[in-house]
Length: 299
Length: 276
Image 1 (cartoon, rainbow over the protein chains, first blue to last red):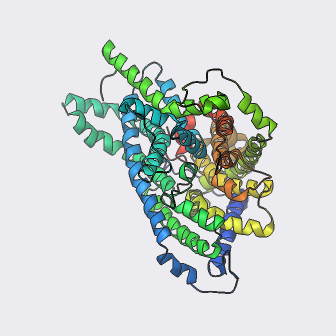
Image 2 (image 1 turned 90 degrees about the horizontal axis):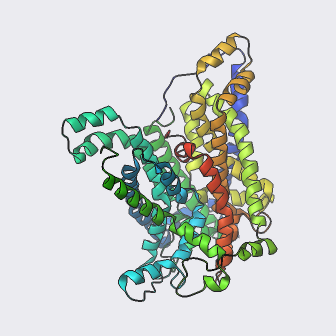
Image 3 (image 1 turned 30 degrees about the vertical axis):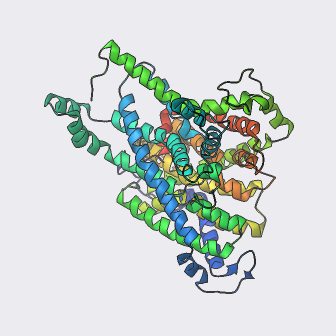
């Protein structure tokens, strides 16, 4: 887990220059690619650039005020949170169940695990394309399978019908990222203290009590990291939704990223989206610094 | 937990369940592979056929004929160059952070935050700048962005691997008169070789799979394979044959890479936070 060894080399005469030469190129590239664009986008957010306007003078907080009355943006935030809070618990629970199933040694287990992680390593964009094919109302197998079970012809328009788009998106996301949760939790379970578990078994503790009182606290740190990574991924979600619905029907499935992409790169509301991006950066940086410090990941 | 082994019946149930789980998770992958081998007529057969009646590679041939495979080459060039640059600078930076505590905790947190920001918030400002200086749709522009994207990842992974090198080796080499560069080159890099390979492979895959940066910053010249696939979803017609064939081409290399580096996977996908 988190390593906290105190291990560094005692400074000598040439260390100060050496250690700075080593970090210089990497830090320089990251600075250039973050600070200059950030300054630039802040400047643009105070101007008025759009499809119709080319005003580069200082316009104050106009763009920032617009955010409050932009219903489409708030809906996009709501959509993003809906997907996050629907998909994340399912992925966690399924991942945990799979991890319990596959913990312990059996012949072929490694093969099963290797096959099972495939969804999480393919491109999310390709995963979205796969599910677009799967969900096609005529030529995809999903409606066909449901038809067999239901015993009648089914033609659900998964990526168009407003009642079915969210289930479709969530199924695709759960399919791709449950294996991610699974493999991390499997690693956590495999590292459990066997003696403690055996002692609990001897004491006659029920499986549920063993789970709640021993297993859960032990895997909690790893679980939190998995939830953090997945949670951030879901809030930034773009690829899968883009391939499945392009944010449609209408703007019903626009996530924050899709909203900003369409408004910024298709409708060219440049200065306004610059303001949205500035706020997004501030919000995200604050959350990141707070969580990362709290989790003591960087020690 | 339960005692494993147990009765023969339990084993049968375990294997049956395992096979069922794997089948469900691999079915969409199987489906896209199977579509890529069908003839266009068979792809649009109703009800859908569950396997190609006469598997053929014509869909792949069409990608080559129409020049669409260039997008695979572009993906490779961008992912490979940026990974190489990020590895060289990233290993150096990680070594400095681990052994000399350069920048302290704050630098480490700033670095990883760069990677966890929403891609749209990263690429929108970059686009504004690139449009001004003419870097959109060029190799240098995209390689620069992908390098900046790969660096935090490489630094964090390598940080973990370097921490595992016993410091005593470096200290005794110092006593013997080795220079600081020699410590890095002759002790740390050889000892973290496996970690270096694994980090490079995963950094490569992340860039290879990346979609949004490429979608925003490429037009015609350096289109990557994910952008190429997304362009097939047209308003009137959807080129399923091309979508499936291109997806298969883009996915196959990842299968081999992950199969070879499975041992490092948990560490690789958690930025080194969980050591599998």
